[in-house]
Length: 390
Image 1 (cartoon, rainbow, N blue to C red):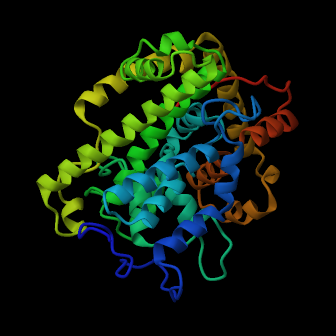
Image 2 (cartoon, one colour):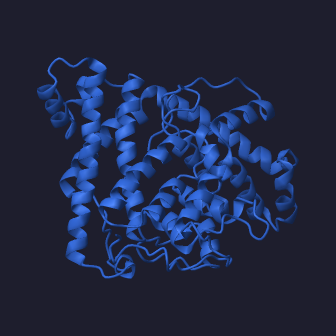
């Protein structure tokens, strides 16, 4: 049974375009299903998480990362007596706005878009589900519920200061109350993202031999995980040993979030989801002690994985690709696919055109961006390799 502060699927705040709800699926189940069937969700299969997608079959992509986030989010939501379906919908949608080549691609596109309002992947995710997915007869976008859109827009907290244009444009039509915190379901999805990437980046870094198991065993949290494995399985082989330690690490993160969040909710004693939104702080959190240890681990990954010399070299290569493609499409709009040309023809000014080009490039997969760059600009295929983190 859901807690009083959970989002009630029987009383959603509606959709921008009213429609008859399903007789056998809740509104949030429908949101989740629409996200899974979206074109942008399928494209995550070939978008960088940490490694360029063609590096190896075992490394995470944005798609497998999103699936892992959803798995953690469901666990946390159930333990906190939240609405699991809403939590899962936000988790599955949270990375839809990522460019090819991960945060490296986003940084390049944001720099190019500075004269036109910049680029932000969280705002782009909202833009995708409210505009760019154009499959339905009666509206653009997926027509998700207010609660799902709120979660996508502000799962990391209130949006203050300069609001990204893609978010501001939709919010002007459908107020998502950007100044408040999101529901506890969206907060659970956000923490699930942290748990998933902290865990799987260690897995992928080991597989890529960017650091050793012995080095991991010296880090906070992990040192205790390895010690417990060694005490229980003193003769365990190398690969099983590290897997056992990392799954214990994963469990530590999940249990910490659940324990701390339960304490936060007990202290606040929220009666409704409104109380969660207006609590003035996140309810779903890590403990300060664990967050301090995670900071040490993240610094290790940043140095040894995300900014290793070979990574820095690869970042230069893919940044140049984005830097080449953006001005090319600005000057050669006829090279855009047919379905984009109506928007181009109706663009009132250069800013509108730049935002169309940014939407197109942001939607590319790694391999399509590489192929298009080679076809339109020239040059050799880039080698496989690590380029990004988180």
